[in-house]
Amino acid sequence: MNDQLLSLLSQYGEISKDVSFKQLTTFRIGGTAKQLIYPKDSIALAAVVSILKENEIDYKVFGNGSNILCSDKEYDGLIIKLTRTFNNHYLTNNGMIANSGCSIIALSFLAMQNGLSGLEFASGIPGTIAGCVYMNAGAYKSSMSDIVEEVEVLIDGKLVWLSNQQCQFGYRKSIFQNHKDWIITNVKIKLTPDDKEKINQLMKDRQQRRMQSQPLEYPSAGSTFRNLDNQFSWQLIDSIGYRGKKIGGAQVSEKHSNFIINVDNASAMDVIQLTDQIKKEIKEKYNLDMIMEVERFNW
Image 1 (cartoon, rainbow, N blue to C red):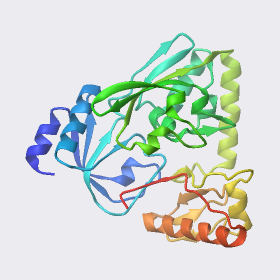
Image 2: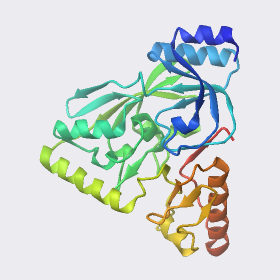
Image 3: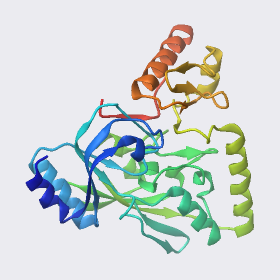
């Protein structure tokens, strides 16, 4: 991207150059993004996207990067990061409206402090609310689709509100995965009044369970594979003897085998070789196709 274009874009937000994906993702893996922008607001975001499309420049929207495996290559497009400027939230009657870059963990604690139940399941998910909607993230038999009322989306330069039904939620799926150029800007969720201490205790109990069962001390992208019908991915991975298996700096966690962790400055290819082996072994043993829950970017 030339300096003239970067100068034009800079009026719409703060620009950084040569940012490592190791800083932008919870996996702490990947090459370098040549340029990144924090748009000032929705108007600026729409202008940035318009300029990029007009000049046929590739771009990718990032939140916390908690579910992304970036390749080891340099990315020559523009990363649009929403966490620094799209982070306002507002309480409503029995719910809240939050900008897309808000931390879902922070929102779950805000809900608890105001005696609102429904976000407890998300209190350990290290993503933004938009990322959680995009993936229909969930835990403890609850998911975003249970609480989302409406989602504001930037579509072809216009802001449009989509209902829960229009989001076409499924298991770790939403309509947004089929429309990569749509950008979530706000999310409206519905919660239920409940006792603050009861909600707080439930969140504490689940935090303790996570600390005991998940390798939170290592960089990762959370669960690596989606569960299949009536079968947990960790059990399938255990059954092929891959708990603790290591390639380069990537390892199948000994604490939870559906977590691949970055134990020693892993490359993206370390992770891919490990996941490819897992998929191959399970396919040969059970004739099952494992599906990655982690999104691959810049491959």
